[in-house]
Image 1 (cartoon, rainbow, N blue to C red):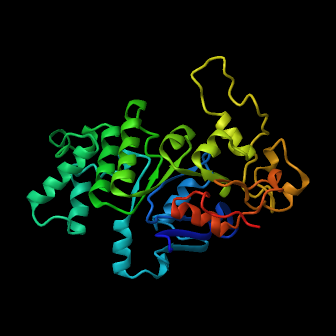
Image 2: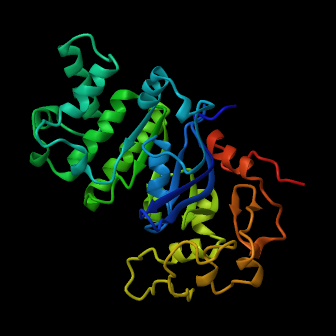
Image 3: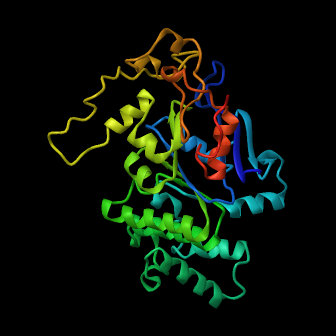
Length: 349
């Protein structure tokens, strides 16, 4: 089955300089599929600078890869026709981190809802368009009479973010890329926004790529999770085993950093991780986490480890598990597209 949206061995390098050019590797040979008959929520997790947002921008077609392909229904984005791009823009929608940056301050918030209605011909009259906007706003817990006609500065960040979710509800896309959608709203509204995303997934059949550095929200909302470190995938699988029993030292570090409501609980008490080394190319060929890893071995600096299938629904790129079967990258990528995580993929011989 062809995935709706797919990264195939994608690398993205940001270059700078005119005469003496240099570059930063934001993504390093990453493959991932999303969108199928079984709608799922996949989290892309990692610290700042791990490549999460770059992956989201690539999937949305806002960036082109330095190497590799971004496929939409089996066609490279660079080869899509005008009608193909129009269909892509409707089926692949986004919710961004900063709700205030999404809106034009000279237009009321109605604009973000009325434009796609007109663009994609979702209503035959103004009255029908108004009705659809009101239904979408009610669906995310907003009162239309208190929202429509207001300017962005007259609403809170949480209200603005819910209007963007209402836009997705209005368009019924097949994939929604949500880039840190709750990081800039207060805690009381996070549950409301996350519940709205779950509603899009369960009731409307929309697959969601949830980009976050917050493993707590990733655990509560997602079915599967991919952990990124300096542009490379290091651990992946169903969210329960990855969060509750992380295998990669970096994922263990992230989980140990989750704050607990206990003043006597020491963060990262189980690990002593080395200082962060600046620059993604400190380890030319091996595991990028090796300079910080207390369990690093000589082989860790010689070649990047393949993904080892440690459980039916859990894979990790770490030589500590080299006795486990190697999972091909295409099988790992396919798992997220089919909604099976790794559960329905037979282990390699």
